[in-house]
Image (cartoon, rainbow, N blue to C red; front, side, top):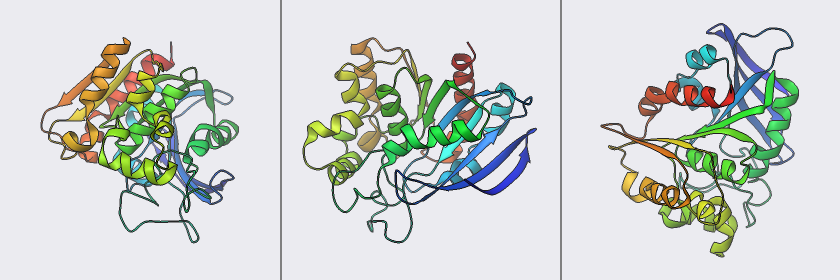
Length: 277
């Protein structure tokens, strides 16, 4: 693991790191904020998955999480959204290819050699973080935005014993039923829609996956709300399954980091309440 930069922030350290990933076959970059702590002490960890077109840098630069993470003493990890580089497949559209990994392990050409973001986020990166940073892997939470909200929900639903806190900002809750998801899941996983269900939060809930509770913030002025995000589908699925869902429709907010940064401290506090029990 190579350290690209470190800086003092809110009493802790904000770092950016790079390593050679065996999952993707590429170099991968991620950021980690570690609050001030005692030698030998381990802290809870909150994973943040970013949305379409983003890298680790979007939330690192604009997410405004450090003050809250310092207050609650939570490590914050922000990975990239896809493999990148020469020889990595791409698409001219912004919603497919590099910057749009959708947190799946692709099975279809030309994506399958490198687009293995599920394995990277669920297995490889956690092992790297556990070995290199002062984290308590028994106290993990996960959150994310848009495509990253989709990733946070599906990864948590598939790994309910790993994550004690789950939340999302404007997530794609039912990719099997919206254009972004149909394009991405079809491209990465093929035409068999049964293979998509393990990467669709609403479908996972319908198929029996459960979470203790869930926080979702959604701007009611989000231009993607009606066509791509569909929180109504998540509400219906959670109601039917008996999953306590706190769905907050935030008046006047859009899809940008102006929205995310406004409510980030709430999501860190939500995680802290569950990770420090």
